[in-house]
Image: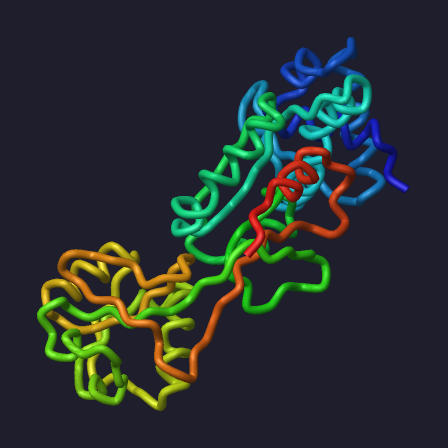
Length: 292
């Protein structure tokens, strides 16, 4: 078994970039040789080099060291907050959350507001993730991630916090936009304005089209809903965009129609590692989560 104090020495060297700096940064008195010994003994136990020297006093992790650092970092950075919460009942520290841009704009503001109202000492660090950050979550780079996850690994737990509903988007002047009900078959010969293929919403769009037996003959791709709406408003095609709202969005130059039957919905989840050490910050985030 790896001894915890050796991992602690490794963590501070990786974080600060050197043995002398690590010794100064330790939360209790320790000498530079003692830190050096912790790391060397850990490397001997693992049979791996965890650092390489790039200057007189500068150390950087090897590939193996970087992987280990990503794993132990959440524990050592979250420990002070856990101790404070245990001894004072106060929830404090930094909570790291990754989310797709739509959810950062539409879902997280009210959610974080509830969290800050109950626990004002929590610092929330939000990162936009263009694709579901499952690998980063498994490596401990985030405490939680919010997205539509087509499939979660066995090591990840999830809780539904919203539902995305697809809407067909047409230019307001399009002939079909004047109808009360839309038939997708009427659009089968038109250009489709899609998300870029490397983005998850691209697959969602074409899943919805496939349900209606449509294969667009031409397409334009873009990286955001705002850009897609701009191209549709310019009468360059139509699109399908998902919204967290139960009613169709409204826009001056666009017309939104609920996707005709058969309809499809995409659940939005907050996900976290099942083996995450006790984390009051994560518990507080889940307690404040919206209900769909």
